[in-house]
Image 1 (cartoon, rainbow, N blue to C red):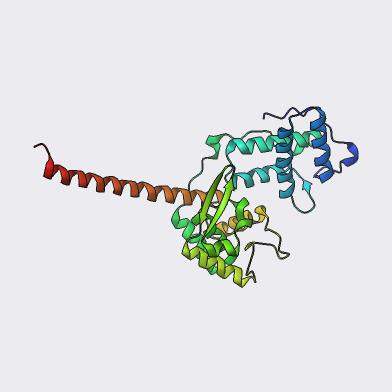
Image 2: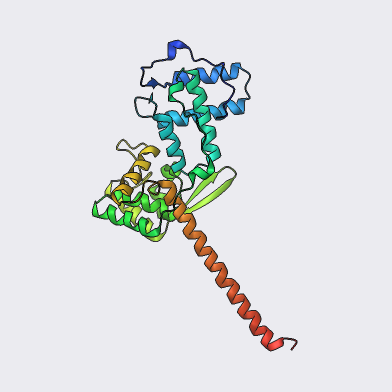
Length: 283
């Protein structure tokens, strides 16, 4: 796998705490790594981007911040479920690999890049999606129900879940800034009703709808687990029972509707031309 040129970087031994099965990742290690990259003369924008990715990995770790042999593969799967591009996932994993190298944790690295063709998976069908909703109702899993419906009917990314507030849902739409562009997420009427009911049931009259008990945003890894658990209960194959598949279902459905609409427009236009031809044609 292509790496950042960080082979010479070695984290200060005083900062390292590991056992044969795990290594603790700390803010001090991240700061030391960033400082050493700057000492090597790296471009500042590149260093900041790397620090951002490593912080993303750090935030995805469990509370004890222990890195194990399963940590990086699990994070890669999370990124894929969140619909990150293959190239982006490979780049992020490469940056974490370089950090692990500097920590003396080669045994926790992921050494093989993903290939686009390996990521091809069967699409979630609308029948399977409906079965997930039916299963959620029968299990009285309201959280799983509204999250599944949210991804499948809006195509929203999991990283934007904290932006789903009571106020936004009441307004019916949510502006999402992506780079220089702004995307408008629209909440269908049925989803609006479900989200506001869920918020009220959980005592939330303002602000974020999906939070922990202490009011902080729900973790993205936890959202993924809720969806995967519900899909398993609904007997939906694991490769389909994830956020990526739900978002893809939204895109596929919208594309199909738009294609049918375009066909109807073309047919109506051709009928109009035929009518005109009958009345004013040359022959």
